[in-house]
Length: 560
Image (cartoon, rainbow, N blue to C red; front, top):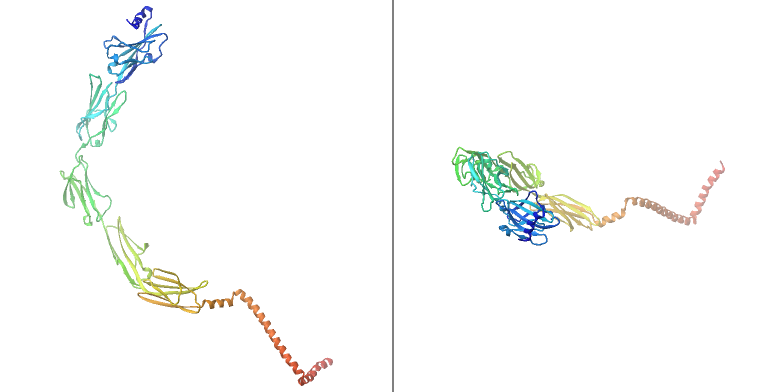
C-alpha cells in the first residue's frame, strides 16, 4: 500500500467528509490534446497534500488515472487502460489527455486533498471534429428542361457532431417542395472512429433560367460552416426562336463583305441551317453563318434562315446596300490659255441624299465655272460627294498659261542707290532681263505674278529696259532714270526749302548793295572825267552860263 492510498483510507478516520462540487464541462478537439482544468484552474488550497485524477468507466465505476504529491515534482500514473500512455498533469494541476477521441467523452474528476479538507471537481469532456470540406459527387452531365434529374450527392465526411448539409442555387438556399426540388439526407457513423458522415442528394427540375446557374452545397457545424465548389450544369431545351443578324452592324456599303448569322435559342444550339438568298436555298452544315462577299447594289433585298429539321421556324432580315457613283470632267492636269473658256461637269448617282462640296487648294470654294480664264483660276480643285458613310472625291489640276505682260515698272530712290521694280504676269514663270547691270535684291513668283527688284547706281541719265519672257512670248518696258550724282548736286544747290528762302532774301540784299556800290563807282568815274573838262574852256563857258542861271533865282528871290 503506497502513501496516497494510506492517506485516502485515513481520511474517514480523521473525520473529513468528501465534498463534491458542481459538474463542469470542457470541450476538446478530435486528435488534439484535451485540457481538463481542476477547479477551473484555481490555485490549490493551503495544506495541500496531494491531487488525484480519476475517470468514470463505461460501466459507471471509477478508475484511477494519476496522483501527484504536493512535495513531489512528478506524478504517479495509476491508469491501467490506454490512458496510461495518454495522460499527464500540468503545472496548474490540469489533466492533459493527448490524442483526444470520442471515447474521451466522459466525466473526469479532480480530487484535492489537504490537511483540512477533501474536495472533488467533476468535469464532463465533449469532443468536436469539423467535417472535411463538402464535395458534390455523382454529378449529372446535363439537365433536361422540365425533367426531374438528380444533380448530384453532397458529402460532409468525418464530423462530430454530424454536419448539416444545405443545397444552394446562386448562393441562395434551395427549399424542398417535393416537386421541382427534392432533397434526401442521411448520416452514417464509422464504428472505428465514431465519426459521422452526412449525405444529401438533390433532385432538381431545371428551366431555361437555370442556364449558367451555380449549384453548391454548404455544411453547417458548431466549429464553422464550409461550402463546396460551385457546379454549373448545361440545360438542354429545344429551339423556340430564331433570329437573323447582319454583320458587321451598321450601314452596308457596296463592296463590303456581309455575314449572315442565324441564331437559335435552343441548347445545345443547332449546328446546321438553311439560308435563303433571295429565293435560293443554301444548306450550311457545321456553322451558323453565311458570307456575301463584295456585296453589290443588286444584292439588296430580303434574306432568311431556317432550321434544317423544321423549315417552318425561320427568321428574316432586309439588307439595304448604299452606293455612290461619281464622275467629273475634266480630271487630272488641265492646261489652258488665259482667256479660254472651260466647262466643268460633275455627275453623281447615289442610294440616298448626297452632299456635294468643292475646295480649291484646300479651301472651300463654289462649283467652278470658267467663262474667261485668269491666272487666279489656276489651282487644285477637289469635288467631294458624301451620302451616309460613303464618300467619293475626284480632282483636277488647272494650269492657266499666257504670254508674259509687264504690269508695272517703277523706280524708287534709296540712300545711295535707286531701286527698280518690274512686275509682270505670265505662266510659265517668266524670266527677267535688264538693260543695265544691277544687283538683284528680290524675286518672287506666285499665282502667275512675277516680281523682280534690282539696285542700280547710275552715274549718268539712263533709259532702262525691263524684259520678260517665257516659252509663249515676251514683253518689255522702259523707264528713264536720272543720274544719281547730278541729282545730288541739284539738291545741294536748292537746299532745304526753309533755308533757301532766308538765303534768297540775304542774296537779294547783298545783290542790291553790290549794285549800288557799282553804280557809285561808275558815277565817281564819270565825275572824275567831268572835272578834267572844267579845267578847259568848256569849264569857263559852262561857268558863265551856269552863273547866269544861278543868279536868276537870286534875282527872283530878291524881287518878290
